[in-house]
Image (cartoon, rainbow, N blue to C red; front, top):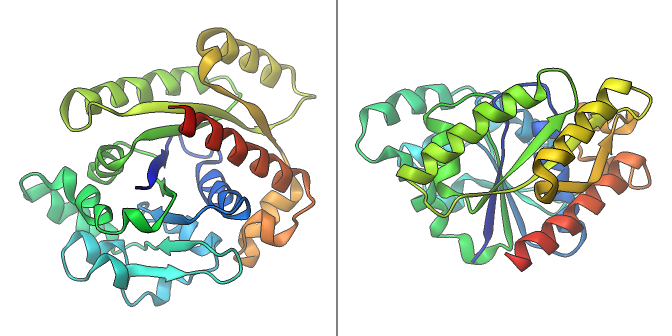
Length: 256
């Protein structure tokens, strides 16, 4: 059975989608079978993998509305070797329908249970907000990876996310855990970044990944070519960092 990990932060612009796409590609690069699920209506993870969100015959929207099977909704990406369950703005309509249904928070969990044995890891890119889509992702997950940009409001946003996780644990998924916090877009020349990093290590030392994702031009460029950074620039600092993160995720999830 696959290990399912949500990439989440209720604060936008912290490298959440970048981490979802590139961690998926990095896990594949170390010979793991990977499914990336884009459950954000913006569809950025879908496009970032080279899948055209405007030209999907079936997406996670149709899957959650019981209009297609999970196999039909999955697209294989030849370049990276990962499978993608894509998303687009139609997902907003699906969320409205889910809000009217009983036990709709379990829809994604039930859907991926049918194909979980095909993969080693299922990575879910969550919306930057708490809604029914995020609840579905958390309910379906074994763990959560939290990308953190080391800036002034980072710890405040983290506190709100932890409260959300605790609510999910007390209702739909008692086994949900924080797999780790990953420091993203990190600039060692920035004093504030270093100060916030020290605070994170003080309060969450056992949960903070050793890997740090730096600010990197190749990381920023890759999505515009519809590629993950490992396919786009394998020897860049960004690619090397995500390979390192994948190795850490592997160790943490196997130990747990």
